[in-house]
Image 1 (cartoon, rainbow, N blue to C red):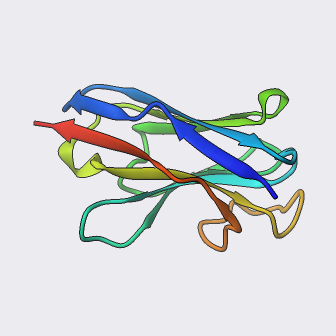
Image 2 (cartoon, one colour; image 1 turned 30 degrees about the horizontal axis):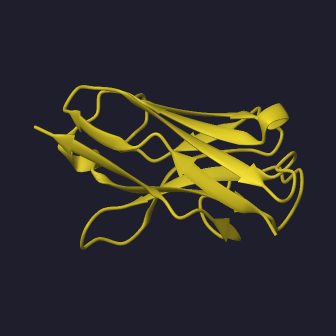
Amino acid sequence: QVQLVESGGGLVQAGASLRLSCAASGRTVIGYAMGWFRQAPGKEREFVAAIRGSGDSTGYADSVKGRFVISRDDAKNTVILQMGSLNTEDTAIYSCALDGRTRWFSDVPTSGYTDWGQGTQVTVSS
């Protein structure tokens, strides 16, 4: 079973950038899609970004498109979320996830992930 541990969250001012990391252990993530989700207080968890197992395709929620970039370093079993131009609506707990259903899946999944990290808090002040 894979363990996912996020890091890099914190308190920043609007307009700032943050880099979140997700380190996987227990199994390889090579070939499996990875994603980031977030949950704001009082709201349901929502998809943020995902990257295909091959690393050559990504997908983003409309709310973060053009501001966030997801990438992966399979040699380090890590997925990164680079966040820019943060605003107060980005305040949430950010969790990474692995889609262990199908290796080398051709799509960039926005749901159905099988393994989750505990999350890291991102707070953006105005």
